[in-house]
Length: 488
Image 1 (cartoon, rainbow, N blue to C red):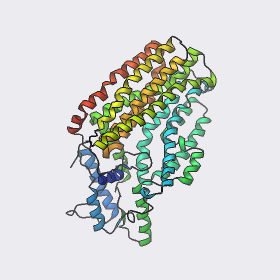
Image 2 (tube, one colour):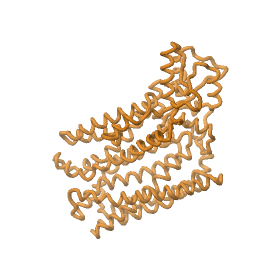
Image 3 (cartoon, rainbow, N blue to C red):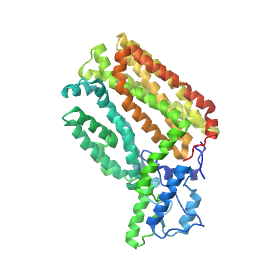
Image 4 (cartoon, rainbow, N blue to C red):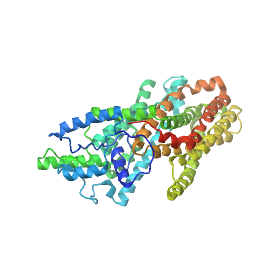
């Protein structure tokens, strides 16, 4: 039976199911998890494991197309595990191989490494921006579109990489993908550094974004080799089952969390489910569109800051990097305030027992107004060449508004879609990465045609038109979720 995408408070049992279904562990969520497809008592279990996987893959394709969920309850899984001696599980609740049982130091070590990834991967996409004019001179090009694309093409890789890497991580584990992506990133970075033409440079920048290995390079790579361990429970159990099959000669042994998916079905499922959510869910599409547009503004600024402050304030060389300062400070302030007030508000309602996902959007309602205000201040102050601190303050307000919009939108999607949260985030990531990579290509022409004042005013008006979205979902979101007919 299919189920609608509605929010509810997961029980402890459902939380455990969510972790298995969506791949939740110490690293970033993927849009695919193990599917507990267990035959009913009336069905006949195939004799071979390979035949069983074919049956599961066929069932999955049917489920995806017809909206039938293949996941069963954990009670059914436990009963099946007890009935079938060939199912391999962790050795009790205290098994040290289970990532949930790792020690405090190891858990926090993993968290810190993954946090570094989350922090530094986007940084690698924009840190190159101040040096773009020098690279353009070295390659003898004056094409404004290519100048912006050299920065944003990295983000384009973000939209394609997860579609390939996520299913691979489900098959082979998180750790091998981290190490292989890191090695590839180093190779692509060196290739970009020695590129002989601009086309070659852009291709390798795209590949750098696709593997997303920037934060693991250098010292982080050495740390990951020593400190990082596999975190995917399905992969850990599959490796255990493989060892036991080799030791016992029993080819029927299989992991309790075995997805039973052929690679073709795995990749198909990885791509189909987020696409369905983006095109069929009003909430997912509207929130993702809002986030994508605000994220696009960030890269419009990244690709034009150097030109704006060079032409308007005659900043040259390394000093142009200071033009990014306001945006960074504003984003940091927004992050701190969101963590403090957002978590406090949510915790209060959870304690009362009246929490609803739409409560996440109250901060977004406030943040939405800061973005157009910041764009107007930045655009017109730079246009009239006021003191450079004024546009920097404007960009600080923009950064604050971006964070106060971006963060609650993401947490809202997670709370709304619960067991499908990773798929919703995958849809969000693909849309925002595509827009952030392609839309800024026309930013130089927009400013040339409209000027800095009216060009940023246009962006502000579009942003202002999006402000009602969180207000509408606060009022009607619960009703929309209750009437949801989206099936996966």
